[in-house]
Length: 474
Image 1 (cartoon, rainbow, N blue to C red):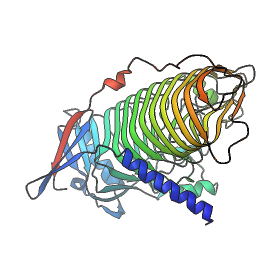
Image 2: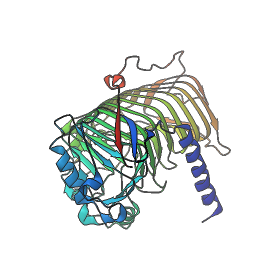
Image 3: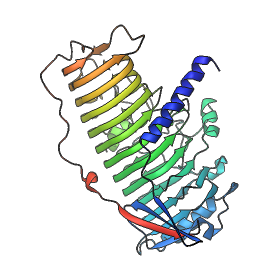
């Protein structure tokens, strides 16, 4: 390995450790009771009347024995009593090898701090699932896709949590297949919840996902918090959190190191997303940290053909990442990205602070509508500090369909030792700026203004979690 590459890896590792300590989650409390029993308290949407441990169903946590059928049997058994006050499955200390398994409603999956759920590398343990209707084909290959490690559809009141237990997707197997162009279907995600409401994913460490880590889709009333997500920075498509055609979502107090966008906001792909017509809206992202040297802190798109609106981002820390909040779209996407509010970002070692792309390619097929032009408007950034930046902004709209109503205020950017000569490269955009350094492009003239931030609260912000507990010989 060349010295410069070693240095980059070392710097990334040090940055990760620093940010992890900065944003270390307020994890569940462990309390000893007597000599043999312990009680763990944690926060959840709802507490459960019925409880079981994976070993009650014959689980073997040796890291070698498959527990796929054990998870299936445990959840099937608990689903019978879940309507009566809810049910929870505890994954105790150990290494629990498994393929994909499905969750149920009124259910909590609790991963103990000394437990590791290991994704199987036996492809037979990953069943195929239907293509997403808003995508029309798989992302890796057109013919199909595999179920995620933890999967759920048409659920109400589902919680995936722990006291910083670990879920390891063992993704290197899948990354090699992808890089060798041997995937005939789309790789599994780590967690995917579809057509569901009242969803919580929290207090977990997710590592080495085969592809995207957390993918709520066609769902509402979602809380994602206190996640630590790690993937090698060169791993393919290991997005951290991807809310997709979702409403009323709260993402907070999390830290992601990724080979792709730390958070990618989506809503469908070209003509399939336009037809399905389900936007992502009412999304709040706050107290969040990111490292992703080749991708965005938060990407809006590129699959945004159902629309993206009412996004609030604040209190974000970023180190060694390609860009801040990026908009990715192109001809054929249609729909819109509008009413986006960003404030209080601290960035260090960035290629771009602001990046908007109107010519993003990647189409599902040749049938996309070449007259489907996206509308990008009402994009607001304020109170941003950035250091060691190569280029302040690369803003490219679409000819005859410019990105409009862009507002940028109170931004101080310090440049890297070898910055780009043109700091603000702009085309087909319209808007205003105020108190921004370096001086913005002429298409964003100065106006005495403080860019707005949404003043109302989203319903998901007022959802309060309950204090729950489990007891046993852990």
